[in-house]
Length: 69
Image (cartoon, rainbow, N blue to C red; front, side, top):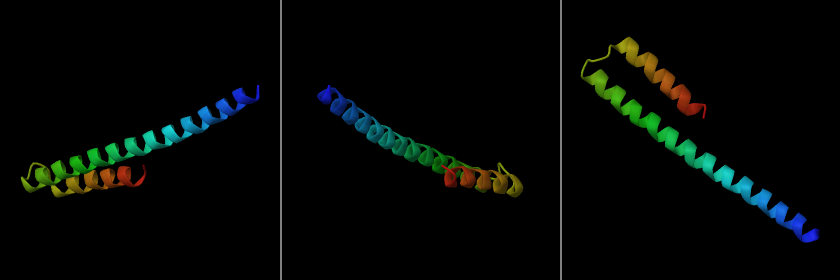
């Protein structure tokens, strides 16, 4: 019984660590995707495919999403 409890504690601990690491990796991937979207947005603005007002709104939204992960 005692060994089973230790094993369960170790499994729980490892599960928590793996979950934490996976969440961090996911967060990095999402931030990188938002940064790429921001680069495309800047290109569209430079090419005049989007006006200044639209650029500002979308940029603000993307920054909000990045900062609130």
